[in-house]
Length: 101
Picture 1 (cartoon, helix red, strand yellow):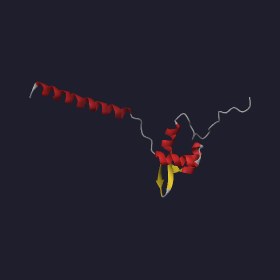
Picture 2 (cartoon, one colour):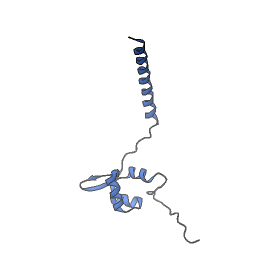
Picture 3 (spheres, one colour):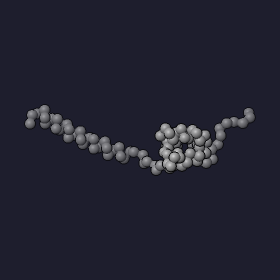
Picture 4 (cartoon, one colour):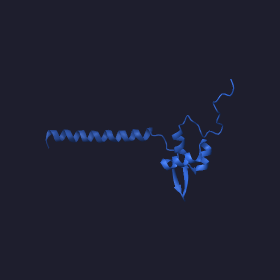
């Protein structure tokens, strides 16, 4: 085996070790995946205070699935879409609009 072939073998070996370390670190830092929660479009519309047609459009664009000819919305994905700070589905949502000044 030539000197170049030995060097390449050593590099490949070290690269494999580095890739294993990267994979181990990635699995440690990944956020746990929350289970999907599927609801009817009407429920999602009420929860996020948006029209049912908007929920259906979101379902067609990857935020839902069709079961028996009816759309079901994935609440987990919709929460991510609207953002954690938005809190559209918070039970005690308070309007920030000031009335009369």
